[in-house]
Picture 1 (cartoon, rainbow, N blue to C red):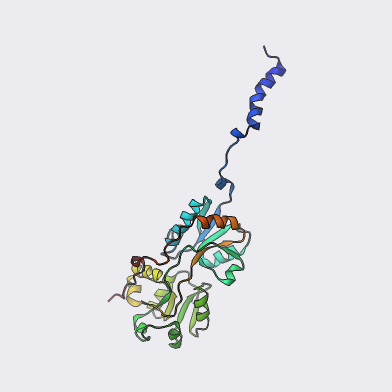
Picture 2: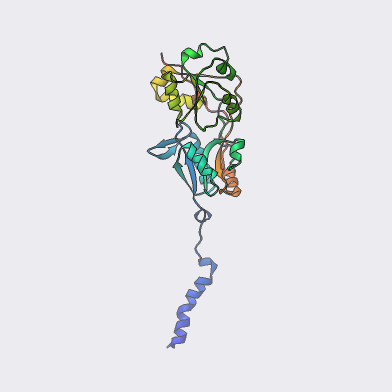
Length: 270
């Protein structure tokens, strides 16, 4: 029969062994110990698609999600307007990134950037068909300025450093507080502005969604527009370089030229 002291030793010995044994310590996956990365997205089809306030997909969202999963980086996608995204990432306390931004000198002052995740076709101009007919054959961006056309742009939005500089001196520029490019195309269709600058992929998608926009606008390629600027994930300074390095390693580099089916520009409706 065990005396009380021996009984206590007999009872506690297995518990002590378990406490000291590394083999029985719970294994916590690396991802479970990490903070969850907030990935900010605004609605801009076909790149980012938000439904009922929830990011559900889009070309660049899908590329980013696959890389984050492959890199084992815990994350959540959250909708936010572009101005709020910039303000959030400028706060170096926010553990957050946003999808599909151009790398500019101004943004590099407060943000870290991933490797390129996508490079599309060069931007062009969307305008009414009657105005397009007045342009020279194979027009340049300067031809639009010489026509004194009313240019509508999204406030606070970058079109790439080369185009930003060219558009800054446009005398007819109207910097508009709109959140989506379909609003600019609707303004063109209603003769409130004359043209805007847009990606051919985005224009093709928006035209496919609206008979009115297809009827009253057209896309004009511009001969002097440089190759499209690569798009990146833009992250706050609170996101460590090693996390971005893991993301870069997981990125599957997509083709620089989009498929013809996605970028075929429809003709204006008759």
